Image (cartoon, rainbow, N blue to C red):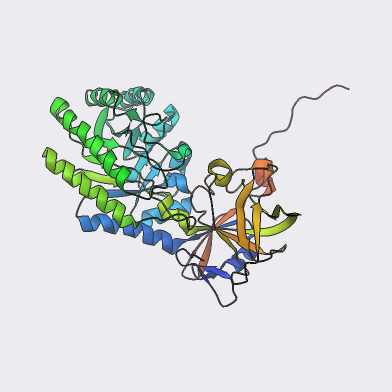
Length: 439
C-alpha cells in the first residue's frame, strides 16, 4: 500500500492525512470530500525552487492554477513564493480576489477574449503568453488603446511529443496551441511583435504535454527552440530574456507510474539551456516552468460514502459511491486510473475485487475497475488517492449534483476552504418561465 505525503494509518485503523483522521473529516464535512495535504504541496513547491537555487540560475516556478484554483490555494502558492499561471478570466479573478501580486501572474489561453485581455491589462499582470495571430491583433489594438507596452511570451509548438495520453498532448505540430516552430508561423509572430510598439517580447514559451516521466522531451524541446533562437539572433538581433519550458511533470497515480524527483527535471532543463547559451554565446535567460499536477495532484484525496452494490454472478461486483464523474471526470475522459482504500478499515484483509461505480446516470461513470478491497458495506468510506489535480477543477453539476467541499489539512488541523454546494446554489441563477399557455 502506497501512502503519499503525510498520509498514514492511525491507531484506529483509519486513514489519516496531515495529522487529521479522514473518517472524522468525512463525518464533519460530508462526502464526497476533497482533502488536501498542505505539507506535501509546500514540500513539492520548495523542492522545485531549491533545485533552481542549487543550479544558481534565475528562475520562476509558476503554479499552473488550472490544476486546482481556489482563493486558499492561490494564497498558499503566494506563501511559497510561486508565480501563477491563469488561463481564463475566472482564474484571473480568483487570483486577484486572493490578493496575489499581479506582476507574478502569467496569462495563458488559446482563445482569450477582448474582455479577458482588458481585465489582465487593468490589473497589470506580469506577462501574457500569446497563442495565435488573432490574439496578437487584439493585443496590438489594446496596447494602443491603453498606451501600454505589453510584456509577452510567444508560445511555440516545437514538434516534440510527450509520451502520454493523446488528449493531453500539446507540443506536437498538430495542436490547437501556439505558433508552429517548423512552418514559419513562430518566426512570423516574432517579426510582427518585434516591430510593434505595443509589445515587449520577453521570450519564448512551450509546453509539450502532461504526466511525463522522463526528461528527454524537455531537452529536445530546448534544443529545437535554441536552434531557432540562433537564427533569430542573427536575423533580428533577438535574444530571449525568458525561456519557459512549461510543465507536465508526472506523479504516481498507481504502481504502474514511476515518477522521477522534481530536481531531476530541473537539473536536465538547466543543463541543456546552459549548454545552448554557451554554444551560442548569448546571455543566460531566466528559466520558467509551470508545475500544476505535480504540486497538487498527489496531495489530494477524495473521500466517498459507500452506497449500493450490484453483484453480477461470474462477471463483476459493482460498489457504488455518492460521487463519480461529477467530481472526477478524468476516468471517463482520459481512462485515468487510481488507487483507493476503505478509509475506515484500511488494514482489513482485501478479500474481493470490486469495481467502483459513480452515481451519475451514465454507464461510463466508473471511477475504478477491479479494485481489491475488504468486503465493503453501506456506510464505509472510500478514499481515492491522487485526486488533487483536475478533480475539483473539472467538477460539474451533471444530474444536478452539488459540487463537494474542499478541506486543507496540516499539522493536525483542518480548514474548510471551499464550501459544499447546496441545492439552493444549483438554482440560484435559474429564472422562471415567463410565458403562460392559455388553456
